[in-house]
Image 1 (cartoon, helix red, strand yellow):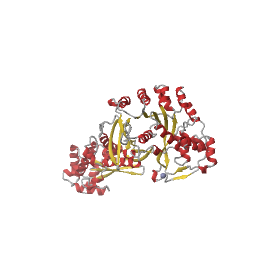
Image 2: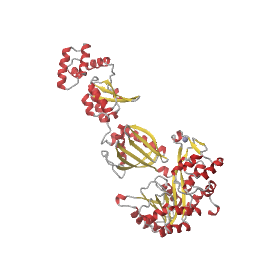
Image 3: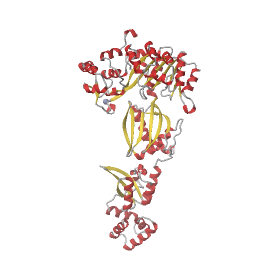
Length: 584
Ligand SMILES: [Zn+2]
C-alpha cells in the first residue's frame, strides 16, 4: 500500500513516469528493497530529490543522522527496539517523548509510508510513532553507532569508563555518601528503575532512571564489585551474586558490599556503604549521648576486669557503633584488644587488632576465638554470638579474666540472659560472667531546621502505648517539656528528620538478677525485679524522655518495644535518667 502511495506521489509530481514506476515495483519485489531506494538505484530519481518531495508532501522532518543529527539519537532505545527489526524495516528509533498520557517515539525511516513497519514498532514499544525521513547511508551509519554504543555484555573496561553510565553510577554513589546513606537500592520495576537510599534507617526514593539503563548500570557495578575478593559475572543475571569494592567517593573513603537479586523485572542491586571517614568520628561512650545515669553505669561496667557485656537489638539498631565506642573508650597501649567481626565494618584506632570472618574458608567465630585465646588477649570483641561453641568460648574467656563484648538479637536487655541459656550455656555460667546487657534502637532526630513546638493530643499519645496516667501528667503541664514535630524542608530532604539518636536500656547484673538467672526466670520476670531495685531502665520510657526533651518525635517511639508493664511517672523517668549521687 505504502509503495503505491510513494509511487503515486512521485508520478503526480512528474518526477518519474508511470512506466518507470511499474519497472521499479517489479525490481523492488526481486531485490526486497524499499521502493524509494529502488528508484534511486535505478537512477530514476536522486536521493535528495526523493527526500525533498517526501518531506514536503508528507510534511515530515528530515534527519541527517550521519551528521550532527546523530546526537539526537537516544542510545538507550537500542534496548527497546532490536537491531533485526531496525534492519528489516530500515528504521532507527531516535528519541522518545512523553506527551500527556502517551509516549511518542520519533522514528527515522527510509520509507515513512511503510505502515506495516510503523504498526510493528508501535506494538513493540507501546509508543505512538512519529516518522521522520532519513537516507540509507545515514540510517546505516546511525544503526552501526547505536548498536555499537550499546553498553551490553561484556563491556570492555575502557569503553565503560568513558560512557555516561559511569557518570550515572558515580552520581548515585556520591549522592548516597553525601546523604549519609547506609544502603543504596537500585530496583527495577515494570516501567522504570527506582533508586532508593536508606538514610537514618528509612528508605527514601532519590531518583528514577529509565529501564534501559539498568543492564549497563548493573554491569558497571558488577565490574566495580569484582575489584576485591569476589568476581561478579556480568552475563549471569539469573542467580544472586555478591561483591565488594573500596573507593574514595566525594572525599570519603567508602567500603561497599554489594549484592544482586534476580527479580521479575531484572537484577536488583543493593550496595551497603561503610563510610570509613565517618566511622573514625565514632568517638567514645560519651558521644553516644546516653542519659547520664546509663553512661555512668556503662563506664563502670567496662572498667570491670573481666566479664561479658552484651549489646542487643535488631539489625541496624547501632550495636556496632556502641561496641566501637566501648573499644575506643578502653583502648590503651597497655592492653591487647582483639576483635573478630563478620565482617570488620569500621577500622578501629591503633592497638586494636581486628579480624574478619571468612566462613567459606572455614574461618568461623569458634575457630577465630580459639586462635585469639592463644594471642594473649585482654579484651575480646565478638561480632555476634550465634552458637553454643562461640558462647562457651566467650564464657571461658570471661571466667579466665578477660573482658568480652558481643551482640545478640533480642527484644530487650533481659532477653540476652534468656538467649544465652537457650543456646545452651549453663545458667550459673551466665550468672557468673554476664556483667551487663544493653538493648538499643536508633530513633530519628527531628530536623532542627524545620522543627516547631507542638502539643500532642491525648489520643495520639495513648495510641503510641503511653499509659493514661503518664499522658495526663504530660498534658497537665506541657510547658515543662519540649515536644516537637517537623514539617520537612530541603535540609532534611522533606523527611523532617536529620541524624539519629540511640535509645538505650541497660540491665546490670546485680545479686538479685544473678539469682533470677540461676532460677531460669524469663525476661519479663528479670526485668520486673530488676526494675524494682533500679538495675534496669526501660527503653520505652527512655524513648518518651527523648520525645519530651525535643530530640525525637512521638511517632518515632513506635520503633521501641513497649513491653507489658506499668510505666513510671514522667518525673521518676527523668530522675532515673540522671546520675544519683551514690552512684558516683
Ligand atoms: Zn527539615
